[in-house]
Image (cartoon, rainbow, N blue to C red; front, side):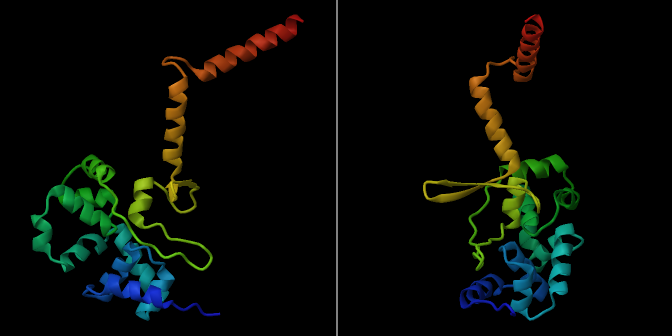
Length: 203
């Protein structure tokens, strides 16, 4: 059975892509909004491979990142602060290393700016099987990659998605509350095992 787009999906995609000056710009805008590649291809009436090629180019920032911004106006881009330019290029799918090269700044500057940047709220569509696509800026903020496990948690009626790194940091913070500074749990465990073995051998 061939999948078709719902009326709600079409309305949302119309809204996202309405100002895109080219088909490639529309693909990038829809991708950044969290739409699946196959749905973008259906919506624009083009091949999946065309969508994939544009997105891969944007991800590698061969010319997808900065050029997408230039389509919207290079003069306006140049008037922005350096932090705003970093965030704008990141939103276009450019890698951090390429952003640093594009703006002539250090990778650490880019990393620090993006780490501190708030991630704006996004609306995503829940598929018929309950799946959602996590937008790229959220995946970057959570440091999650395809195939990674994430933790889901309900809190005050909200669904929270916690990446592995954040979950480990939370666990470490919890342990630090109850373990005095300078105490090594692994050393204590080894010492207890040795004492237990000595008692067994003495018995």
